[in-house]
Amino acid sequence: MKIKLKYRFRGTKNPIILALVLGLAFSFGIGIISAQAATVTSTGSGDWTADGTWIGSAPTTGDDVVIVNGHIVSMTGTATTTVNSLIIQSGGTLTHGDNSTAQSHIINLTVTANLTIALGGSIDVDGMGYDGSTSSGVRGSSPTSTGGGSSHSSYWSGGGGAHYGDGGAGRGTALAGMAYKYEVDLPNLSSMGAGGGGFSTDGITFGGSGGGLIILNVSGTLNVLGVITADGGAVTNVTIGEYYAGGGAGGGIKITAGALTGSGSIGAIGGRVANDLGNNSGGGGGGGVYIG
Picture 1 (cartoon, rainbow, N blue to C red):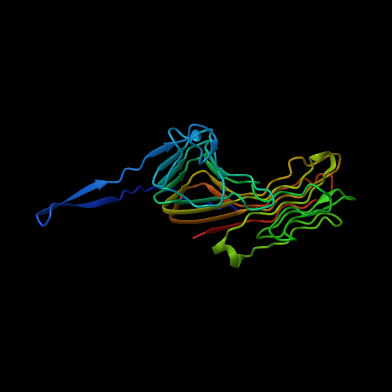
Picture 2 (cartoon, rainbow, N blue to C red):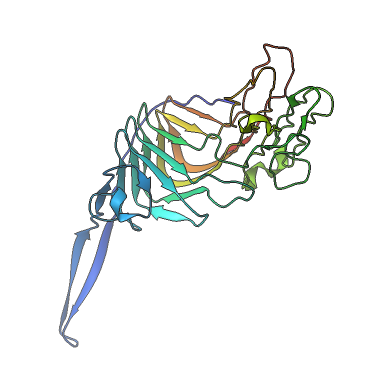
C-alpha cells in the first residue's frame, strides 16, 4: 500500500506569557518571552539516546532535532519519545532496533510542532519486526501460534508471514501465516509483522522478517517528501540450489497529525520472494497503515 501526498509547509511559534509580581501589594509587571528550543543535530549513526550520536548531547523533550545526510539513528525500547520538531534531511534515516521473537523495539514519537522528511530521507523499519524461521516445519515468529509462515522440507518451499493480511502459501505443507489483526483494529494499531517460513540448510535460507512498527503523533504538520516504510523483509538469499523461503509480513504505521502534506510515500507491504524455479514460496501478507 502506497499513499501519495501533496506538499505544503507551515511553521508555528507559541509565546509564553510570564507574570512577574514585584513586592507586596505594590506593583506587578507582565513580560513576554519567546520559547527557544535547543537544536540538536546528529553527528553520526547510533542510538537516539546516546550522547555520541549527537553534537553536544542526546535530545530531550522540547528540543528541535535534525538527522543529517548519511546518518542512521535508531530508537530502542517502546516508550514514547517527545521532541518539539524533527527534520530528517536527504540521506538521513530514523529506524528502531531489530526485534526477534518479541516486540521489544518500536518508533513511538510525539512531535509538538512539525515533522519534516526531506526528499531522500526516511523513517524506515523494513524487516525490523518478528524473525523468519530458520528450521523446516517451524513457523516464523509472531504474537500468535499461526501468524508466521512455515516451510516444507520435501519441496524446499516456505510460506509467507501474516499481519493484517494472510501470507502466501508455499508448496506442500509450507503453510501461510494467518492474519492476526483486522481492519477494525486499525485505529488502535500497535503490532509488527510476522516472519516467513525458512530452512536451516547451509544456515542462510531463512524466512524474511516482518516489518516493524512506527507510531507518530504530530501536533503540527507532518510533511513527507521522502519515505515512511514498514515493509516485510524480502528473501535475499533466495536459493541454495532450489531452496526457497517465505517473505515477512508488512509491519504497522500509525499516524495522527494536525496536517499531512508532501509528495512522498507511506507503506507497509509484504516481503517478496523469487519463484523463478517454480518452487512457489509465499510472499508476506500486507501490514497496516492508519492515518487519523
